[in-house]
Length: 550
Image (tube, rainbow, N blue to C red):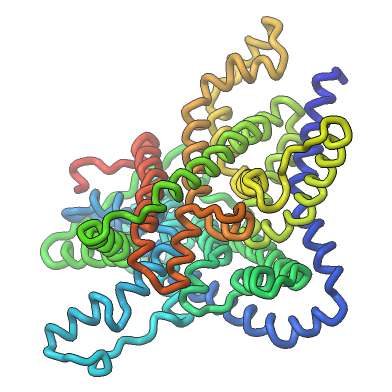
């Protein structure tokens, strides 16, 4: 083995150890509090948290499956005026983080808010007691809001499968006399099972990771309990024990998703079947189809984004923008930007590891890179406490002995947040870079190797320049996710540092919704970036509908 190759193996082993460190740290921290603490958690905290988390995930799962599969079938199987617009608009809820939707709806649906006040005005009622809506601060309210935001995770893969793989089979079913309903339930739905399972698993991961929306709406999930146990009660072992229960839940979700897929991917084989022939709709049927399709867009994006824009405009007319908004936006860009640079650099090496280290070792490292994304943010943050403290102490002793100073990487520093972001979102640039490298004809790197280039030199001189568009898209997606991330930022941000997400969380906790509207709107505008990327990817993949389908 050459020294360079040995160095690569050592770096890969170190990265794998870093990725696994939070899990090991959780186990150690949980064991430290296993005396009197665990019986208290098991008797008074975990039963309610597990029950509410289970009910939340079950409700969100049912809703995202219904909405995502239904809308995917609607735009794939039918042709009606406005279908092209609907096809793109159905992705818009992805731009709104769950905690922003909860924040907007709490003010929008408040008894003194614009919806109830407007209805009372129309009906001639003066008192809020004369017209009462069901309380949004409830488990059903949380399920509805999360479902209408997260359904695109099911819509995207299911729509892609219907467009690329279902045409021939659906046409055969129609030739055999099957009607629309029977075709859907007997052919399309079983065919889409892997895609539905994949999207539902991602949506449930996002629901489990949520802390802002659940806390705003009074739902005591495991994620909320981890945050409350650590921050409010300063009980790290208790938070670690709850986090381990969450981690077991994540493992269960992954297992269920793979079981539901039956070991199959949703893309099918490499070739593309005949596109689905859409049934034309006209008249009231076309209007009904468009209205049904736009309903989740309106509830998941239109109402909250429109209300935030209106709230910001009202504040602009009255008091102007908050004085701290620029500093919050700058902090968001600085921390997310620094973490993006680190994440892309590490992700490039991880994605190229099958070429640099060999296929078996490289694939193992790529799988390890996905651990951070699978862990909810609160779990990752708790698991990083001990490793960061050890790293800080070690660097302080090492550098302080000779130089009298040491770099700060421990808790309460920006470096801790950058490390957490890197581990949490490493899989995004890894996946994007891996996809870009896979598109490069093998003859090009082979030719470079024959001309004397080493593995690493071939990567830098040939493969990376050809794969840079996908690397850039992965970097952009990672940056946007970091800018919106709430649980990790809340728990590991430096003291007295506010980002857009943490400021919004604080304003919602205080009930001063109008002061956080500008931060919320900026987060939504940032979230529109990945939606635009997805629309472009769909167009480049040949999935953009023709003009005749409009």
